[in-house]
Amino acid sequence: MSVRIGHGFDAHRLVDGRPFVLGGVHVPFERGPLGHSDADVLAHALSDALLGACALGDLGKHFPDTDERWKGADSMRLLGACVDMVRELGYEPVNVDATVVVQAPKLAPHLERIRASVAAVLRIETDAVSVKAKTSEGMGYTGDGTGIAAYAVACLTRS
Ligand code: MG
Image 1 (cartoon, helix red, strand yellow):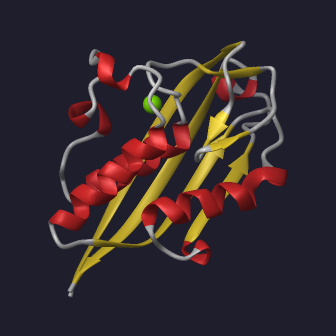
Image 2: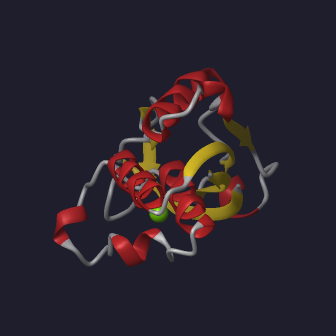
Image 3: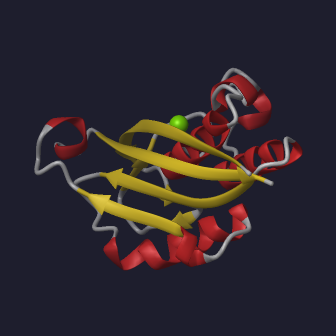
């Protein structure tokens, strides 16, 4: 059995009047991440982790932000496309672990729905999806409200 590990990172600027979407779940907040797609940092970090595990480059390589087709795109659909790509190589996601760093909003009340949303797209059990929320205690761009960041690792196997 072949085991592969991948890592992903993403960050977006938070601006007024954008929907706050994380792992495909809409979180009520007056600000949201700015980007060409829906700027779902968790979906993007997870996508890069899956692609990274198979050395397939990153999300931008497959879905360039210069391409009008991905303007306002639902990033969970892009994550689903990344799942399809790794499956075509014979790999199956086993588990993922992610950390989202943002000062506000509080994500704890939404984490279970986010985990279930990610699990559905990865086609794995919810208990194989870990999503953790952290603040950076007011420091830096994730602490002063400028932005949001996400880190993710993915484990894949091919039998
Ligand atoms: Mg992104």
